[in-house]
Amino acid sequence: MTTGLTLLVLRFAFLAVLWLFVFVIVFALRSDLFGQRVRTIPTDPKAGSSGPSTPSTPTAAATAPAAAGAFTDLIAQPGGAAQPAGPVATRLVITEGSREGMEMPLGGGPITIGRSSESNVVIRDDYTSTNHARLDLRADGWLLTDLESTNGTFVDGQKVSVPVVVAAGTPITIGTTTFELRR
Image (tube, rainbow, N blue to C red; front, side, top):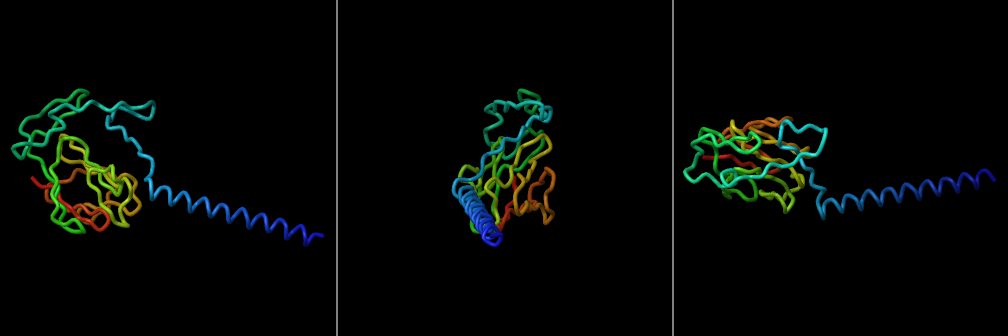
């Protein structure tokens, strides 16, 4: 009788493991097909984890691309944010990868990079995460943030673990694509 009971318990355990495997596969397929939930990252350094952050309303100066190739004045924004006073990169150029030669003008707002169709720069390869990285314009230049990607983001060959200011002409590698910020 113990052998029959042992076999019954083993059958149920095997069945539970099979169902667990099915759920893991379905979850992976769902995230590949529909993408992961979008995480909002507070842009206000004063906003801590104590409460929800409210994104600042962009002004026309913050969202318009630089017409003359550089920002010339320090433009104050509501909430204390400011545009850079010196020349900054105004375009993103893909230098290696499947979309080599593509050029994109940069505005003043954040630029998202990833496999998601909702990203500003869509990179479709197996080594790019759905929401891979983000570029934000700060007072000292473009700030690159890795959004907890699986394979990492590299600036000049070095893996990015904390947000880093990227100088114009510095190679940024995401997956099999390399691009640069240019003036």
